[in-house]
Length: 111
Image 1 (spheres, helix red, strand yellow):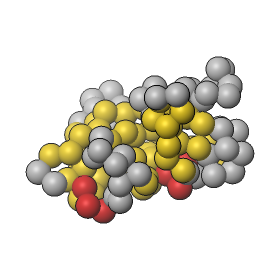
Image 2: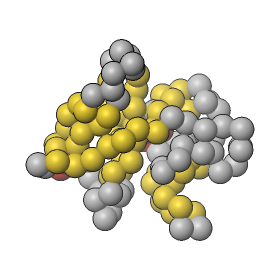
Image 3: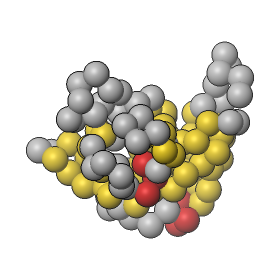
């Protein structure tokens, strides 16, 4: 994937992501977890869980901790802030986040 010139890429229809769930998108050779919250806000971050070594975050449980939208890893349950990618239990771990938006009924990712 050429990251020197990011471009918006269509990922899926907005209706393909149920509210308060995520999906995994393969962009180039990178797996990216894309989440849709109940208010239709969208977030995207790396799908790779550095604590387990597995690409599973898109299957995590979406929730809220102290006002911060998060996803809990389905393996060891670390919480990652959807806005920043920061791990709430391990300040040394942060996932890459991506710009994501809904346009004309589709989800678009800048990667």
